[in-house]
Image (cartoon, helix red, strand yellow):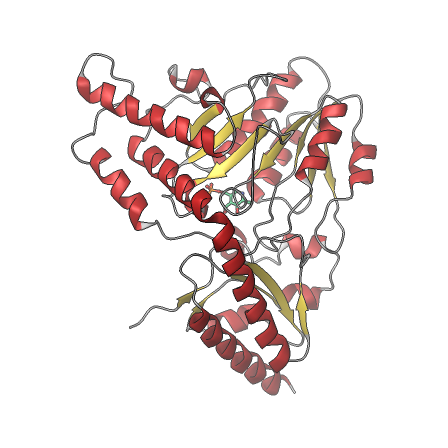
Length: 386
Ligand SMILES: Cc1ncc(COP(=O)(O)O)c(C=O)c1O
């Protein structure tokens, strides 16, 4: 059986073969524990981890000591949000602020902190998915310690004005955490100029391995203090104890290096392919509505609703393409997308939305085949419903 055309690159990406090659030695001969101080196995593993830390920090305009390795963006988000808020709760009242369109790893951390005594604000967004900067400014109070807003939305690809958000937070002395797991390697993210204090990265969104990520923690101007989530050793300056996964860290570093090299060319290619996909759908079908902002958007993301269609039925009818109705997390729960709901759309538009995620392996021929399969499936479903 041939595999379907993969158009779900926001859920995950395949590991680049060059990344696989870079990892192999650290699963075989270079298997030492990077924390072993008494022999060459440990020294070599530690050297590999430190080289990766340096490469990653250079890639995002940070300092090596600002890179903390984690198991992925879920952990990075939790460490950033719980870490700031739990530290702040020991000092006094604590208000934290986010958007209603954030990833569950942010929203659920906020709910947990609400139960622990934090005041929580979940700001709504415009129908494009964009934050309203005036509302953000107004919502910040004397007790606000943290704003957490993602760089690029995983469902509708909306790119938030992170520079402006960071400036507002900086002026009000509020810590700004940004979940950039869909953004790093796709759009420029330069921590030497961006006013962001904490930044989450995930390996498997940029052709690296699953189970590894980074939390960037700013060390100067301002120096951010976090309470750790785990205890058990001095790894990662005590912030994230646990034996470091050398092979995953080396793979993540290689993946970031490759993504940054390719970013401009690949971004333009994906924009063209996305334009082609949308053109084919719109030319051949009526009632195609784009969800999210078309200009402030990840190049490899398209999210559309098809009038008079049920997205779940469409996705299961489309055996030839691997697509989804939203995030991989919500596809397990099958509840309507909290992101589309937050845009203020009627239930029908929410339930007829499909996410197309284009990536490094996507070709023009695949886009043509996928468009034609979607057009047929939508027409079939609409015929059945009349
Ligand atoms: C925006 C966003 N944040 C966080 C995550 C979680 O990342 P990870 O799978 O590395 O835990 C994802 C991936 O699903 C995501 O898209």
